[in-house]
Length: 263
Image 1: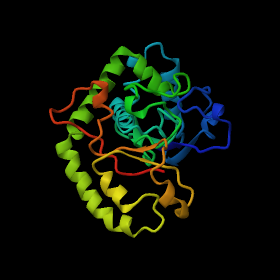
Image 2: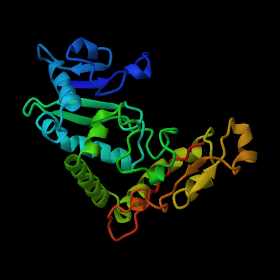
Image 3: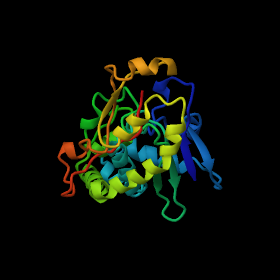
């Protein structure tokens, strides 16, 4: 069974994901969207997990039997490492859950990471010093907040974050991939008549941070390009947001190499 959160016109206070709204499955119909299921009662498993999360005295005991904790740790850690806060820990959306037919456990599925690298403004004051256990609301994001508050589960989560970082975020691994992607998109960047930065900005940003002004129209670009702005674009040589938080990393310096300018 696959379920996602709904994008709803209801008030935000009525859509807190993984919060408890009672044992009646009907209370969740407008808050989640059923994607696939062949069982006669597709909502029972979801309600049971939410019940275990919100109404258990010890989540380190109640959650592992019904939730694939590894999938949750991996996604939350990825969100933090990449400052992807248009997600459960930030906006409270953009995820799927899937109930495995063999294990019966709920698996957490990453979805829609287009607002990574701090491009989802307003969720945090400083994306580069984001807490490794950041959650936008401890009361309205109970899955994250209860994991982070529990010593056993928090330790498991931090181990997964360190594993992801040390295995995938070394400069030796990332730099060649970013150079390959830059070569792939370069002709299209140069040919784009409506881009909000220059071709040289694109090249410079592969190695240096840029600060670009908020530009309203193509006609205003030439005069306002380098004005002071809060739109800071980090390069591949920037200090890693995770390394700066004293997480053990490979011996080679790791950089974020963020190459998607924002205006």
